[in-house]
Image (cartoon, rainbow, N blue to C red; front, side):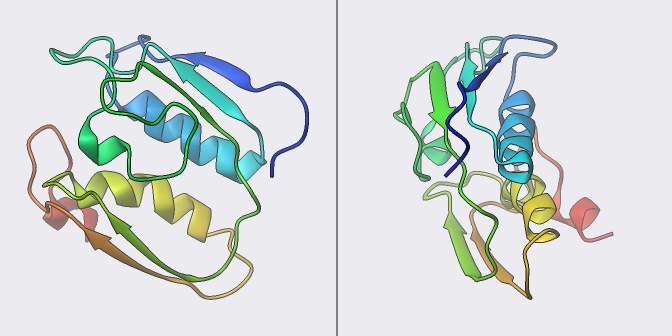
Length: 130
């Protein structure tokens, strides 16, 4: 679990106001073992807030339509991970979050990513494999 200090608050409406700031914040929170609170999630989108594919992890406030979450990371562990968007959500976007964390895992790990591979508004799987 992250240190007891207060969560770093990030305004999710900055820049393009989409999901990239959320993915970057969660990844950095994991790597730095720092609690992160993101508010105004996807504020720049037609349907702001979390979508179903964003709520399959364990977070405070992780419900469809939520506009803020708090993430309390634990230690980066080695394991065999499965991430399922339970929709056609982009596996490439899952990889953007998971890969940097797995690079710091203490031993070999594997990932199974379930979801879409060629989704709109996300890197295509062919791009990610290069």
